[in-house]
Image (cartoon, helix red, strand yellow):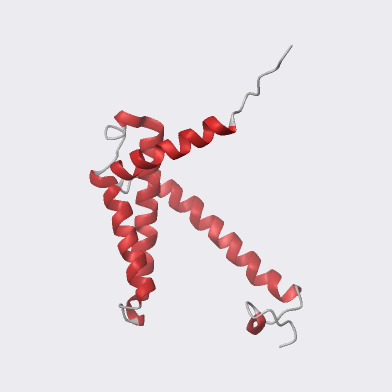
Length: 134
């Protein structure tokens, strides 16, 4: 008697990679704008004073893109009826829920790193340098 596994890694990978073109096609505007904002930040073409604006824009576009991709993945052809905006630009209840959860997670992570780093016997100057004796 052979037992078939309940989960197939190959099938999961096929579904995940198969979703990429669909997700990009349905959320193209939010993903494109997010790519532009990241490119502006990384290129250094924007003055330092505008970085907080880029940060807020990237956070808002991230939540819009995440919400769009969730809607497309869950509802498929009915995603527009469930609140998918033009090109994946929308900010509704789904994005607010994602925003709260993500903000809480980032706060916990940042708070934990802030308090645990001194406990590791390492000053902040040595972070990333590999030298613990600074």
